[in-house]
Length: 360
Image (tube, rainbow, N blue to C red; front, side, top):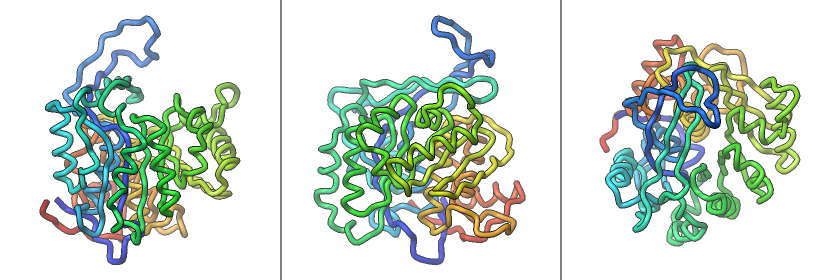
């Protein structure tokens, strides 16, 4: 396995994440029309492996930055799994890529989080996720428990990741702790959570918010009228800035590309054309690659018109593009060497890092 070798100090030395840890299955639906409320439809059960948001995001960060329990970059997932075979497998997977897993507890009563994903012929889709899994037992006290004996992190620059599939109260607790410690707070919210997250003051505590275009539409509260992507992005940013003028907003728009916005600056980054096997997990891969770039010291916005990959968001776009060539929601073959080779196959020039082989 190879990791990025940045020839300077990392901008951030660790990440503490919270969110769902689980697995699932993927159905490819016949037909491209929306699944009706009372409709039964045939679908193909795909052999792909499905993973949940926190795991996907933390995985690529751990692999690309060479996470180790006491290394240059440390990764600390917080969550719960069941005492079932799936939970044991996920726990082992996270540990094997260098994550420190002491923050992952095992529920004595509930099973590991499970999702059923569905995908249309144009690769759009959604998922249905259990709300009575082990992840539902994650509570704010788990945050305090994790940080209780982590004095060694105080003098380092860190990030938090508040991902869905655990309760909003636990995610807010992590963001609050991040504010107290001066950490860089990252969050994602589902469309169904927007109002609760906003009323709870969540947006005020977030430095970087990552959403897809549907979630941006719910934040903008523009369910009617002009739904052009640029209009929705502008409206979403304007509403967020009422609570948090300096917030960084990432909006993914499927195969079209993504937007990065902060204050009065906005940049569109087109998607990289590739042969798509499955888009499941692409948005999480995009966020993870972007955070990898931020940790590596890459800027959010282009400084000039030079050819090649120069920004954190462009790195996120590259990771997302390679991720969709895998049937699984985590591309387990993606590391620094394979990512560089993939970029070369797309004639994308990368000069900001070297790769280095490591043993786990």
